[in-house]
Length: 213
Image (cartoon, rainbow, N blue to C red; front, side, top):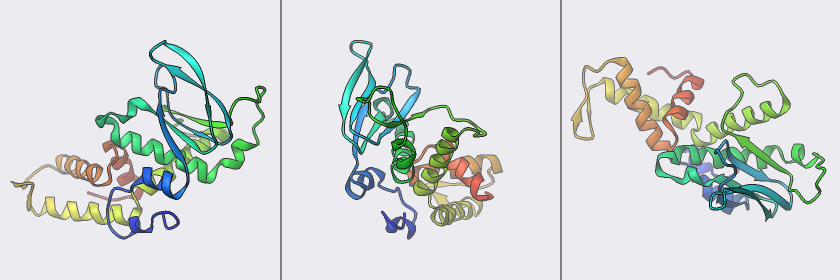
């Protein structure tokens, strides 16, 4: 964050990750159907070459040429309901580009025409064991830290906790006497909105940082 967008460490905000990727890191973002079942949400391309994708119109796999530094995002994530997941995927791939180029550039492919790329699956190992699983785990954790910087996230969470528990007016409603569970869900909703992440990501970040609400 300090390297690419220090403003994000000064106040709680939605980090403009697409702008950072394209304007600061020199990446090109392309929205495509990566595979038939949307099992792969993103892909970072580390060398010029061909990539196998899925064509919904023909319902067949296709091969497309891409340049090094292209960040592919599953186009189905561009729906409004998946905006938080889309932003997380973009950030996850940015981390791969910044941290893991050497790892993927040393891979040897039988087909020399194929680009060296990192395909990032929807389902992740809860307890990573292999090198690839650890790389995915690292990218996820760094992506969360970029989208929800610890100090800014803590400041906003504590501000919201104070407002709700004091029974102050929020959005023209007076919240008072709510259960801790409901208050927690309301705070997570607002954190997700402020940082433009999914509710799941906001909840996990609260737990990771040990913030009690």
